[in-house]
Amino acid sequence: MLAVQDVSKHFGTTTVNDAVSFHIEKGEVFGLLGPNGAGKTTLVSQIIGFMKPTTGSITIDQADVVKRPHIARKLCTFQPQENISLSGLTPRQAIELTGCMRGAKKRDVKRNTTRLIRALKLEQWEHTRAERLSGGIRRLVTFCMATVVPGKLVILDEPTNDVDPIRRKLLWDEVRSLARKGVAVLLITHNVLEAELSVDRLAIMHQGKLIRIGAPAEMKQHNRDVMHVELHFTKRATISFPTEMTVLSEKPFRMIASFATQDQQHVMEWLLSLQRKSEIEEFTLRRGTLEEAYACIVQNEQKTERNERIATR
Amino acid sequence: MHVSCKMNRKQKGMNELQLVKNNFFYLFRWQMLRMKHVFPLYVIVQTLLAVGIVLGFSYLIPSIDNTATLYLTTGAPTVILLAIGLVFLPQGIAETRLDGTLTYMLSLPIRRLYYVLVESVIWFIIALPGIIIALFVAMLHFDIRLSFSFISLFAFSLVGLTAIGIGYTISLWLQPTVAELISQVLIFGILLFSPVNFPKERLPEWLQLVHDILPIQYMAEIIRASIAEEQFSATFSSYMIVIIWFVVSFILCYIAISRRT
Image (cartoon, rainbow over all chains, first blue to last red; front, side):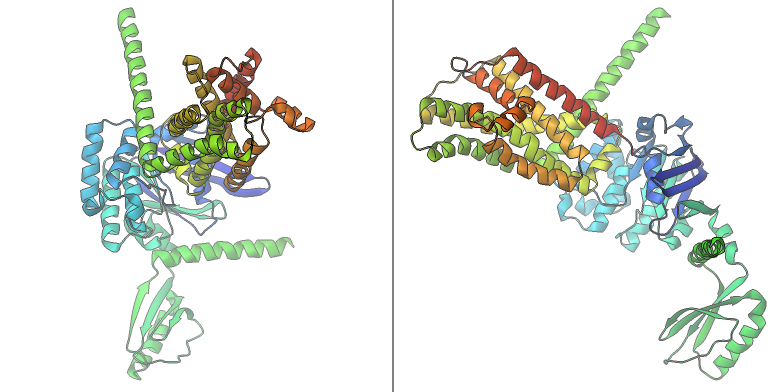
């Protein structure tokens, strides 16, 4: 559905996107992760036709949207990162008018609006003026505006920001339901935990480059040789860790550390000895999460870049 | 075959027309709903400004004669239309650019020229009551006669749309904060340093030369001539200069709204 091929975007001497290539299939939810300033928003701006790539091609449903950007606006619907101003409008008016402006029949738009409002439990606010709504509800309204008459490609930029946990789940259910109907979804997020549950594949972007693409499970394989241990204390404790362990997080009653799988026997013995001495309440051993894998991939990339810079000096 | 092809083309044309109508209508409805709470306020402010120009300036001039009252009265519509296009509209656009609303609206599959047209129609509607009331007040207060015809409607529409086109162009080509600042300064330029409420000869020579290029004096001239035809006249070249400004501003506006970075 979406094919991005070797897209680079330069602003003067600054490279914001560097030979980015990926594709999204019909009915696929594709996550784009990356730290602030990685170039995600610039990439989206090129897909929806606000910016022109310096080089490379972008096609949506085989239509060249670099040459004909107005096609992108017909084929894509978009939820921007910032909440747009809907002052004066009620959620129902905003959603219905957006649907009508996308060219759908009024009757279908009304029916879809009612369904979305019910699905996301927004009934009590449907006739409230937008300026009186909380940030989370406004976020959900812009989500509905992007999905009431969905394009073949739906782009969601941080859709769950400020949204409460119950409605977050409802929103993800809607995203999955869109994909089941054959819509391709491009999801831009910082929330790795949510991405893990909702996306089919994801890509990690760093300094304008796509540094990794794959299914969440494949990403987690990145640190398959690393184990994590979570230690819980009942009292404040000072523990000296064996040299093969790296402390990742240190809080008064909880610590997280990582170690190489090959050292697990030694680490286990150390943990059991701590427990016998009642220095720890309990411990949990687990493989790394996607969030940790993501952090690890980005850190490794930064380390490689630093080393390369030093080598060139 | 030939007939069915013709029918298809006709059907396609009808669908396209329906889409154009729908897009314009829904966009108009969207903007009107967004502005509905400030709409009456804008109309009141415009009316006060228009009446204020006519009456306020007459207090400023101690012994006001017939020519001066006529200048003030027939200048008021031009000032209001310029204020709408160059001051109020750019401030509104700067706001929508800063909060991301304009970008979002431009991501919808609507022809971009419609945004400009819808805004133009709305702001023209806002300006109209103030102008009519101000002219009516002036006719009663100064006991002067004004005439209205289709030429007046044409002149008002042309001047209004040109001012809106220029305002839109300024708003889209400059940074939002810069555009907002310039729009605030422009109101003084229009009121005090433009030959709208007084003859051009009172201005310093260099400013007269500037106004030979700017459309303001020609706008004032065609509006004056359209409502007080016995006392004032407008040359064909005045109409042409305003029309050129209108066309150029809308072209620049369209380029700005369609361009990609």
